[in-house]
Length: 261
Image 1 (cartoon, rainbow, N blue to C red):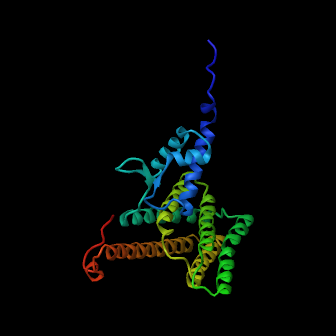
Image 2: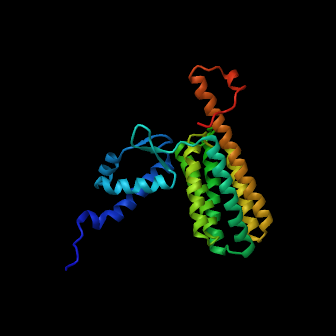
Image 3: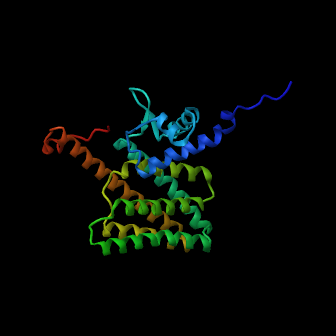
């Protein structure tokens, strides 16, 4: 009995599914697909020139990873984070990054070429700061903020890759992408914020280079906790604005707990 011949769809479904998966992730990471926005299988199929089958497969994978959710009225949308889920994600990130970077520092896993690449990512922040100062504006524009987010994301991702633990690396990347869905809605960075992040990244690189694991843990823990406070402040601000938009006086909001959704 001869081998069953593959159909054109079967022979190309895997690469197209992967292409669709990466396309959706990119749209989420850049804010093109905002939190709670609906996803159209048909539009994606047209954009990628494929059938809807590999699109559905990619969507199923992203649902399993927590980036997409089923909508009550049908279809899927980008996940909308609650206050509690933001806290959970940052606590997970703190635990995993602290362990991984402690290992990198303790075992001296950062080579000279690694440091040079990481330094380039840090220097991007100084370039953006210089652009901002020359522009005379108060904060980065959208294009500049996207460059900052990419440099920040790549810096942490590269450090995590040095830990030689693929599972931790993957989990932290997914966690950062989830929190980024919310943070993209926040305000763009000013000079003070850029100086703060630059200093934290510079200190982190120095403690890892001198193999000071306790100092590395202290810096990354403080860095993540500060970021969590900023995200929660932004969440609370947006919640207040939403209530005011609905006609609820701001002073009433001050006397009631923030709901999680």
